[in-house]
Length: 336
Image 1: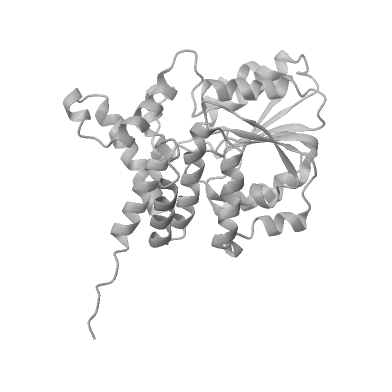
Image 2 (image 1 turned 45 degrees about the vertical axis):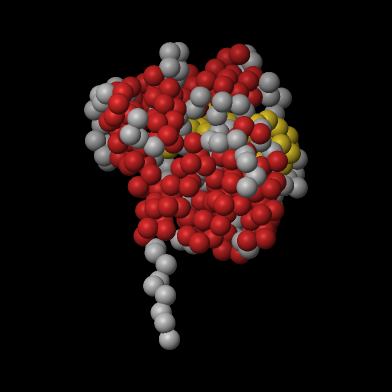
């Protein structure tokens, strides 16, 4: 987790620095940082883009999912809606499909401002400080669709869903092991037949737990779409997971290196060639999260031999490994 905090701080510092420094100084920054900042600034500043961390292509995909699935049984659940870009995209799909009176969106977040949100201060409506609530701003942003949206302040590591069947489950909240376990156990059992599960962080370097869960439940889900221009991958539910299957799927401590190889071979095969190294980065990050620097470094070296197309995500994972190695140096060799 310390590595993650360091990385978030690093990218934020580069963002703010780059907004006011000369071009010559920019050249001193690592290439991965420049690319990460450009991607972040693009998401923030692009015209006609909702305030959030999703790309235009992802927003259009969420909208299309709702529009084209009016026959699916169940509610629409949006986990980790932040400023509402995902929720608005889903709501637009209701209007497109003329089903606004038969479907309802339940959007969840803690709505508490955190340090990592600093780069977004220029596009939100208040000068939030860490710990401030932005619930009212999200309400205002969603007011046009308020009859069809229920906003809920919730800690998803403990929340239990009681809203019945779910037709579309959009997950942008599996940010750690605990959340991955609780979301899977509390929401997956309610997925209706042919429902759609959308993972917004599937192609993000930080989230290996998503891949472990989806691999172990691969008999329950078929790949639906790998969304270009973002980290989203969607699945079609073909069999509702049982509580027993979910318990096994979230038993992360029982993950062997052999299973990890199978997990990420499966996930890498599910995405476009240009994004394969972003998924490979999550494999590396498994060992970073587990504080296993040697295993992480070995995995980086193995993926480098595969000559996968470069991504910012893989570079960020490499940097996390370097930071972990600095914090956990090899013990000095002792002569006996």
